[in-house]
Image 1 (cartoon, helix red, strand yellow):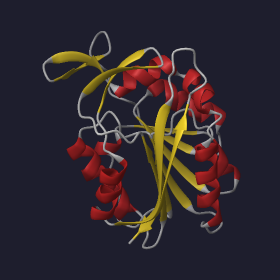
Image 2: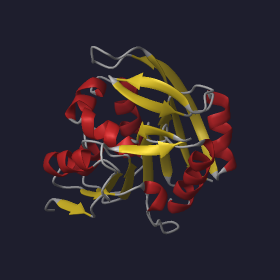
Image 3: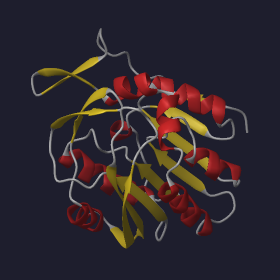
Image 4: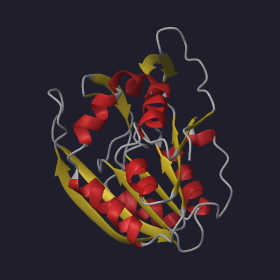
Length: 229
């Protein structure tokens, strides 16, 4: 399958900012445009991430259709799934990330778009994964999106959701040298959210991971292994 780069991200305001609560704050596209391949290198050592991909592969029929939300540079998620013969659609708001992914994983399709605004047909994917791609959304947006992703799965289809399980809302922080505004849930509340939005959570795994980056700090990770109820 040739490289497929679908869609163009809309232009951002001069300076790359977005308006949030009256302040000019970097949006997700700006942050991840700046990080580029450094993000891939920082998280390449995540054993929990790779274990979750193996879990997905064990549950997919040949040639399954998989949605990768916040696909980043395409590695390791899209690369692993496409390398196993699955049809991967990666969606990411960062044009830099999408361009990197399209070059690095030519057997997958990548779309530069905001997943909150991307049409998703019910039951159109055999599996869905979203690795740390909800953290710059509001709680209401996260809940709504998890529900849409659950409906986009075929009945019984597997999903992996990964997040940083902290009970915080609209907190300004620095991530790998980039200013971000983060919203998240505690592990229990995020699990409850997933169940309320139509997922059966099969297990939840928590760990602490330190990205390989000089400005990174240890961070808690939560991986939810689920399926459409």
